[in-house]
Length: 273
Image 1 (tube, helix red, strand yellow):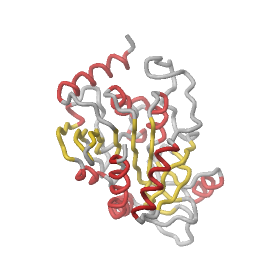
Image 2 (cartoon, one colour; image 1 turned 90 degrees about the horizontal axis):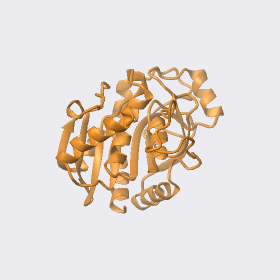
Image 3 (tube, one colour; image 1 turned 120 degrees about the horizontal axis):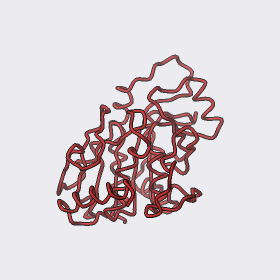
Image 4 (cartoon, one colour; image 1 turned 30 degrees about the vertical axis):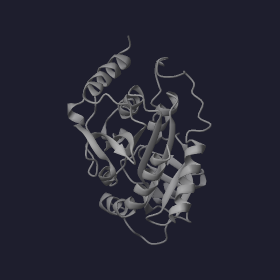
C-alpha cells in the first residue's frame, strides 16, 4: 500500500468514527470568506491540528477547522481555511484535504477565493464564476508516481469547472439580482502580489483574475472524478491607472464585504443539489 493511500485511509477512518454521514458537497473557503460557516448548521467541528496527517493553516483570515453540518437541509463538509503552496507545503499537502473529501464520499466541490482582477471591466467587490483556469505557473499536484486508486495518469482537463454547476450559479445570480462576472482564473504561487507588468502579461495570456490558490485543488479533484464549481471575489485590481499599493488587509476587507452575495450563491446551489 502506498503512503498516500495509507494516510487517506487513516484520516478517513478517524473522521468517519466522529461523523458517519456522507456529505453531499465539500466546500473550501478562501481568505476573508470564512463567515459562510455561519450558514452551516454545525454537527461537528474539528481543528485541523486534531486530524491525522492534516496540515495546519497559517494565513490570517483562515480559521483552520473542518466543519460537518447542514446547509439548506443538505449535509456538507467545509474547510474554514485552506492550505497554500506559498506557506511551504508541498503541492501534495495542499490537495490532501480534497482527497480526504473524496474518500468521505463527496462528489461535488465548491471553492471560493480572493483574487486580483486583471480584466479591465471588473471592479473591486465583483464576484466571478470561474469557467476555466491557467495552471502553468503552479506546481502540478499530480507530479511523480501516479496512484491508480486516486485517478488516471493523464486526467482530462477540458472541463475543470462543471458547466452544469457554472450554469446553475449563473441562473441563481440572475434570480437573486446578483452581478456575476465570469472568466479565467490564472494560478500563481505567491506570496507576493504581482507586478504591474505581470498583471498585464497575465491579462494578455487570457486571465481575467489571478490568485494563489484553487488551481491545485481543482486538478486533484478532477483527477478523482469530482464535479467542481468555483467563485472568485475580486478584492483588488491589477490593471489600474492610479499608483496604489495592494495589502492583505484590504483583500480581507473586500472579501468580507462581498461575502453575503457569495453566501447566497453557494447556499442556493447546495439547496438545488
